[in-house]
Each structure stands twice: as C-alpha cells, then as structure tokens.
Image (tube, rainbow, N blue to C red; front, side):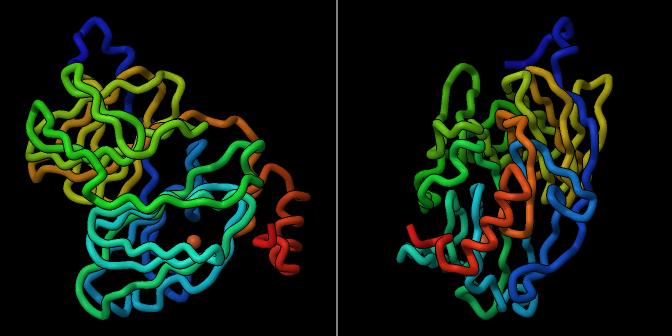
Length: 295
Ligand code: FE
C-alpha cells in the first residue's frame, strides 16, 4: 500500500551509507564487503554482507576450502555461477543461479564452498545472520532452497521481487518466502526495478533494515526527503513502518533485509560469533580439539 502524506513520518529514511570495500577471503576470493567490513559496522542481527561478482576465474577459483563456523547463520544467494557446498555432516549442496543456501552453524560446522566452474561469471551474496544466546550452541543444520521454491512477485509499479525469507505483501496479497519462523524473523527480498519505478513495503517499526544496491541506483525515503544510494553500497534505514525506494534512470537491482534485533553483546573472532570473550576462546579450543563438530 502506498503511504499517504499524513503518515510520511513513518517512512524510513536513509540514515547511513556503508560503502563496500574490496577485500579477499577464503583461499583468495575477491569480494566486496559492506556490513562487517573495515568500517566495523554491523546492523543487529546482521553481522556481515559480502558481494562476489566477477567474470574472471582468477577472482573466485580458489574458493573457500574447509573452515569452521560457530554461533550464527550463513546465507548464500547465487545470482550467477555454480558453487558446491560440503560439510562435516555429509551435507552436499549444489548451488546454481537463483539458488539459496541457509546454513545454521549453531554449535559448530566445518564446511567448504568451492566454485564448480573454470570460466564465466560468478555472482552472488553471502550474508551472516546472528543467533540469540540460547541458540548459538544448537546442532548445525542447513537448507538448500532451489530457485524454483523462491516466489517471484510482480510489483504494482513495474519490476519484480524474489522472496527468500519472510513475507512480501503486495496489494494485500501475501507471498511467503521459504524461510520463516526464525527468532530474528528476517525479511530478505531481491528487488528488480525498471527506471523510475517505486517500491514500497511495510516493515515492523522496531526492526533494523538495510538495502544493498548491486545494479543501478535508488533514492530512499519519502519523496521530500529522499537520499540517493549508489551501486555497491549498503544503506542503513532509520526506524519506521514503511520502506520507500525509487529506482534511478538506469533502473536498480537491490537486496532488502530487515530483522528483529537481538540486543546482545557480539564478540567475534573470525568465523566464531559469540556473546563473550570466554565463549570465543572456548570455540577456538573446541575447534583445535575437534569438539566443535563432535556432538
Ligand atoms: Fe563458510
């Protein structure tokens, strides 16, 4: 539903821009990190966002050989390319364009994420979502979600949105995505807008929300107070009940994330994200002794 002028105060504004910074991770995969990058900015419950995008195999071919995680969830969304995921539990997931993997590291997982192509474009995102204290040590698990299970919804002003997590509501019609019922209650949309098209959506006023533009540019916020967000940048939104985004002259593609903040201390050491330093030290000891995955 469009927001009338009387309720303009509840439309979220663009509060802060976090430009992505080129970096490399794994065995030398080149990527752009916005949340969780050198600026040190996170947005509870979202810990990190990486965009990987390259036509050059040298940028991705080394992949992410075996490495551990504890205390949060990793969400891989492939736009283009082919990646194979394998973990110590024997799970094996083949991710291709449009597929999503939602992995709950919980108490501990050791996995690899390796490209299955030697040329061509590899493009997508990895998002890290925190777990509340009471769930950080739950058993690991994961879900592979093929593109065919992700709703694609035509938008009233043109364009379309894919619903990865949470529920998109357009003209009163609800389109639930495959991921529902998490404590952080995430909304994860991939929105594709033609030039000058507007997109608006309701969001719980106290949830944190941001968007990340990966093609084109957008103006965010009510028309009278909108701010431009350029490609390869994350835009953190103010509080409010509605999100309003308008594509620029070249259209726009962006992901939109919203979630319930946990309001808990975050202590991170690389792939371990816990609430206290002692818990992180325990995670390192457990990894060294094998107890991370021995449960
Ligand atoms: Fe990983």
